[in-house]
Length: 224
Image 1 (tube, helix red, strand yellow):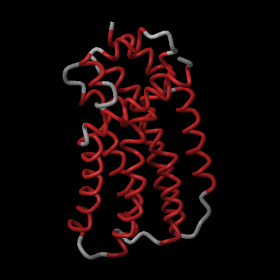
Image 2: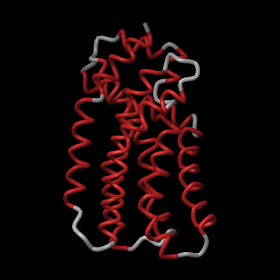
Image 3: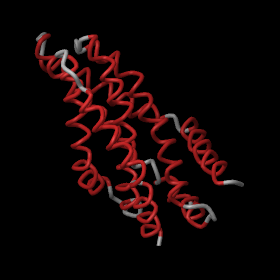
Image 4: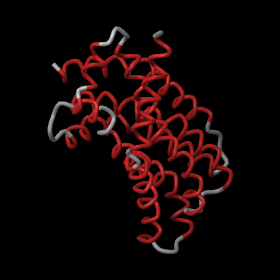
């Protein structure tokens, strides 16, 4: 089997397992919807305040929803021994890890992108900012999965690694949160957002290149 076929096989396997364990898809999505809809209930009928808070609310909710699903990235493979088999395979571990990250994003990040515009309308986000919101989510949610994979790989061997995972990953998410929410906010005011979008693209490319290698090394340390 070629490396590309092995990469595709990892993605296909994880997608099939996610379909069988549908809670992995539904739980983060429901969490995202519930957190966003709770803000109008707590703040009240203040349309201007909700509109001003909409970019931050959507992005913080997406970040927390991504955090909720991170532990499933390697946990089941670690428990059933398939992770060890993946590390012993003749293929580069970083490429196989990248395949698992892509599958994780397809299961968790893509549904968030599809549902986010509807929730943005609910919060009163202007139409002019909808396109920017989708762009920031397309660029930012893969970064959440890529960075999160490093934290999960470091804590997968721990019985109660959830708190440590949060402490490791959340500080690294802050630049994505700042630039993405600021881009949506600026677009809502009719201001240019090319600088923020370019920074998010740079962060994505850096994470795509750099994240799989330390994640693979951390998995080897956790398994051994």
